[in-house]
Image (cartoon, rainbow, N blue to C red; front, side, top):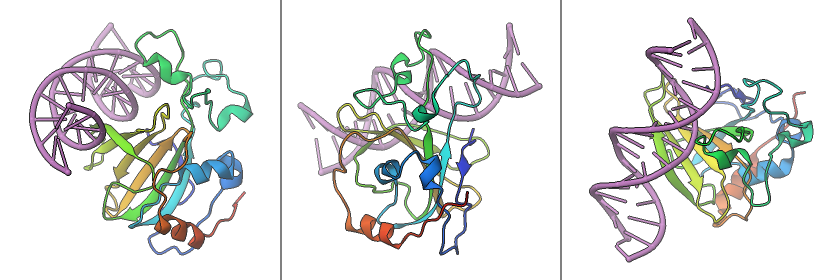
Length: 187
DNA sequence: CGGCTTTGACCTGCGC
DNA sequence: GCGCAGGTCAAAGCCG
């Protein structure tokens, strides 16, 4: 896996970050909804991951407009419904957005409430990957948290889906970090 | 007691 | 077809 593209190559010294938000994120709104920056972490990077390419185009035909997030009325994509057990509904995965943050803690406080539902050991990584789901009713946004083997100080947070509700506990630090970030579109 | 974490089992997709 | 790895489920246990 790990086929998402990290637009921010990890740079612990980097003051400036590239940020292709205007095109690849679908909209800046998505960014605002998904940015996972902790109150005690340093934002290092962002990437997007479309898990679709590995499947045939016929399998998961999606209009370009839909690439942002095939969200149904309750915020969940159709693909989530099958749970992979019935096998009738083809799974359409939402695009993922990966963030790198330099942080001592794995759990990044991004203002939303998350419930851990799994943890897996990852190949070639001595740190396990943790799986979280948003606990808000009908909001099925997921995120994965993984620490890099190469640089133990870096935590990669991968978001999947769009929150259908406001942040539950906005943090001043979050706003502060946002205000200090610099963006530009490299394309 | 309710919500959360832990953890082993299970399912699915993919590469060989 | 088989094995591996990723992703999810769900029971059990923990904690406030």
